[in-house]
Length: 134
Image (tube, rainbow, N blue to C red; front, side, top):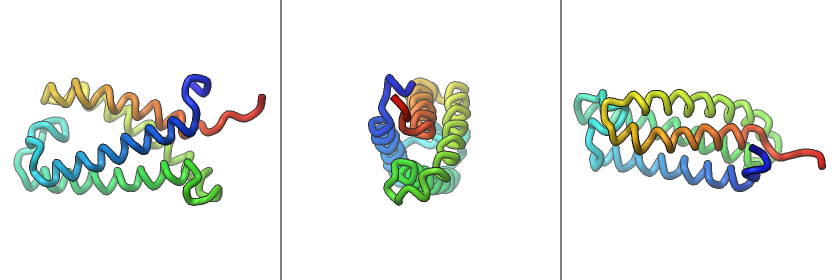
């Protein structure tokens, strides 16, 4: 995977997807996305949507910070620690892909499952880091 996608490119694409997801959660929070299209279609009302969007937004902001740290934006000191965070994010997005595949709303399955699968792969690539040697 290291030869197919460079570390800087993977980090930039991953950060772009995470920022887009955070913006999407703001749109959900504002009520522009149907309740049945988020959280696997299992939410019952606007209050649950608000709580879900706030939880998602908080997690996404933490993930953005981890990805920025791994990309060296906070110095090299945090990059090694962020590697572990990226591996955890890889697992989270892989599990989220499975959840999206089994979502009650078909839009979530068809739109978000591929996005979370790509995000999981990007997280793995960024966690893997720069290619050394040669």
